Image (cartoon, rainbow, N blue to C red; front, side, top):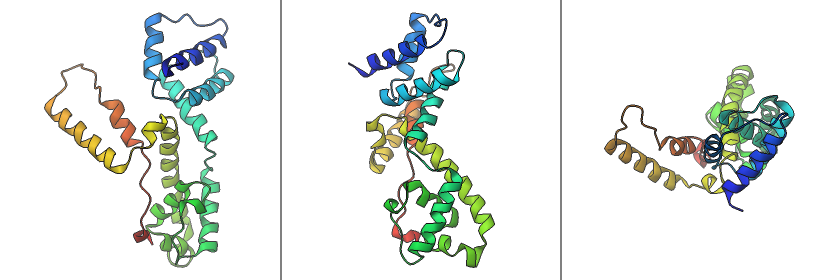
Length: 214
C-alpha cells in the first residue's frame, strides 16, 4: 500500500468516528491527502485516535498536523520542562564540570542541549549555583528547552528520510533554494512551492555541541 493510500485509509477511519460523518468533496479529500503526505502513517494514526477522542467537529489540515506534533511528543517521551531541568541539575552534580556529557547521559539529547545553550557552556551550567545564581538560569533553561522540544516534536512528524538530512545536505538545499528564489521571483498571488522545504529545514534540530562547549 502506498503512503497516500495509507493516509486516505486513516482519514476514512477518522471520518467514520464522527456522527454523522462529514460530507467531504473529492477535491477537498485530495487536498487533505496531499497536504499530509509528508507525515508518517503511524504518526497520523496516533493523531487520528487523539482527534477522535478530543474533538467534536471534523479538523482542518492545520489541526491534524498540530495533533501529529503533540502526539509525537508523547510518543518520544520528551520530559516536561520541569523534569528536564531537574535532570540537567542532577547531571551537573554527578558528572561535574570537567567532563562534557554525551547525549546518551540524558533521557533525551535536547536536555543537554538546553543546559549548554542556556548557560553558554557545560562548565557554566555546573557552576551556576556558585557563580551565576540559579533563578535567572532556570528561567533561561525553560525558554530554551521549550523551543528545542517544539522543534523535536515537529521533526518527529516528518518522514524518516527527512529527519536524516546531514548538515552538508541542508546547506546545499538552502543554497539551491536561495538560487532558485533569486532567479524565479513569484508573481502576485502565486503559491510558494519552496515553503514546505524551507519549513522542513527550519525544523531540523540544532547540531550537537562540540567539546568547545566546555
